[in-house]
Length: 112
Length: 113
Image 1 (cartoon, helix red, strand yellow):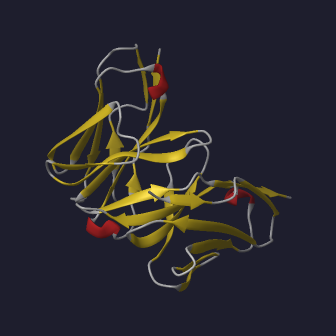
Image 2: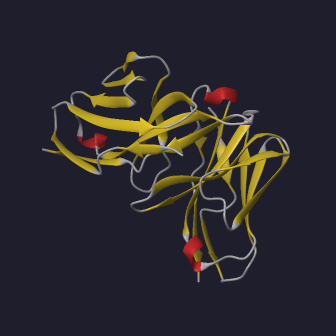
């Protein structure tokens, strides 16, 4: 089976930096995704890590350590519109292809 | 842009009814997925398909079946709807190997009375 853990809620201040952690225990690991989901909307893709290290994309960065089963999403210069749920998802190799399994999400609230 | 469409945004059904949720993608993606999303439980994978007529169980397949007769269409079937299947259902698609991530449809909110 697989286990993906991330904090349920976080609060941060506009303009600050926040780090959302994700740990996983899986077999057949093939990569890690981060998604953003605003209330009432479908999730949208933010980042993908398959090798160890940091991937940077504007205000968002994502880090992966495969040996530690650990990833984080870093959001810089927080804006009010960043208030959303952030979903960590692990790609797993199966008999027929790849499946994507999600954690329960971290609800981020950005305050003034 | 990949477009994933779902047949209904909102659906109300009675217990015991057979329910079909349809999903269509327009980017020739090999993979298609069905998830349900519930408060506190997150997105849970029901079934996925990596090719026409090929399917694989996800984490919570009980009470559901799927059909993929054409590459662009993936249907989720609730053989006999029950109240615990009230949920938001999200369809997604991706290229083989999940390259570029999965792209979600807008979701279908199903209420089973």
